[in-house]
Length: 166
Image (tube, rainbow, N blue to C red; front, side, top):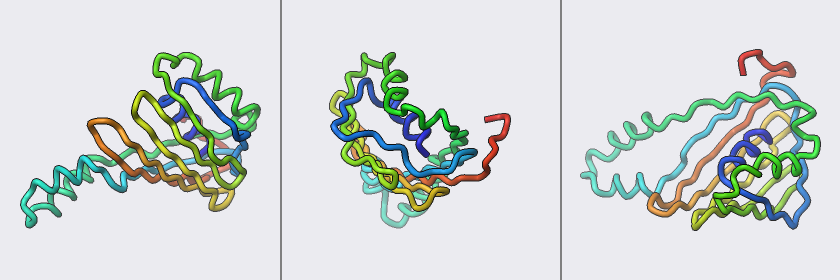
């Protein structure tokens, strides 16, 4: 899950402002799979409100089936945890044109929370360690024109060895 968060940060932010020390989450090394689900979408709710009530459930089911997100497969190694904050900053150096900030609110081995702000858009993420083989995250994004979306992810450890093809 840590690698997923780092990947998410690479896409969304340009530089890091962290007053809280970055602490790696408690997680097993090896092969992880992460599933993602959109829990609520302001845009979808607005669209459904314009559809006759008797058709809403069918349209909602169709929209949700089209929005299936793939399972993310990752290999988490010791190197993933070594100097994580520095690696994160280094990986973000090519994205300064995005003019983004990260405010780390909480960072312990059991919980990570932060706010990513990017040119008027913001994302709040909270990751909770259920145990060293399962992490759950809640992301709330607020993007201009699209509205607010709530996204849940579940990262689950699958094996101490990683498949060759990920």
